[in-house]
Length: 412
Image (cartoon, rainbow, N blue to C red; front, side, top):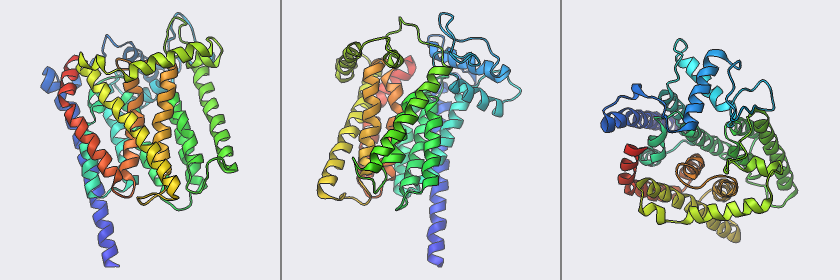
């Protein structure tokens, strides 16, 4: 009994120490990098005048903070959302609402939006959820801290008013929730419904999260692919994904027809033929796999390294899941569903990104970073040593990219 209590107390100390170390890393980096590179404190943050998305997010969040839903209109070319109560732009109201509401909690008397501080708060909460639910041992906790120190998308975007830190925080939180859901031998319905509800709400801020609705329903321990339960789960997931898309479409102003990216809704509403999208897919795939631009730009080299991580985890998940299914069991403890998860999580988002979005400067890099964090954290929390070896390799690759990050940070 005393030994059990001692082990439990030690686990709590490891968890608390890991949380505090993680918070120190992201907060210290956020405050020290601007001061070191530009001799400017983080408190002097100003919206990047060259990034239209950041201007739109911060301005609409500031308006929501002060006026609620009774703001001016943020649509392009005087186009408004189909739902009259939503005055927000093409990216919808939910992220500006989250940003404005969070800012109202932490600075109710201030009309400004202090985006970097909000980003740090979101990241801290996401990391807290992951570390509390994942229950990492000391070695894995230190490896997670090394990941935070070298996962450059966090440090590149934390001092901005974009969506990226929010989605990175969702990636951390979702990893913890999935580990928590899968830990038990028999997946309980209340827990499953809770995770499904959160994923659905997250998808309202970026529709690509809706693809994960299939995971808690179909990737259970005892569900066989193509069984009646699996097919029923796929149908439920597809219905929820369509509901998420419909809500996003209804509360968002339409994209201008001349915009070539963001073509998902054009496909959905028949504004362009499938042949156009197939052409976009192959053009994007060529750009995604093309290493030549990386030879001319440190930022492109940084993107290339993360693309390699995404493709590597997709391939790794597919190979291990296939070999486990052929043997009937995984070599390491735990079911092979988490390897199927990596293949599906990154593979599905990458496929739709290539089909309907941009590949290039700041585009695919931003969309994939949250999903990549999710897969890395789920893999780290998996029993056995596979996650340790894979994450250790990723940390070393990130360290090798440090010169490219430092150069990019000066330019971004």
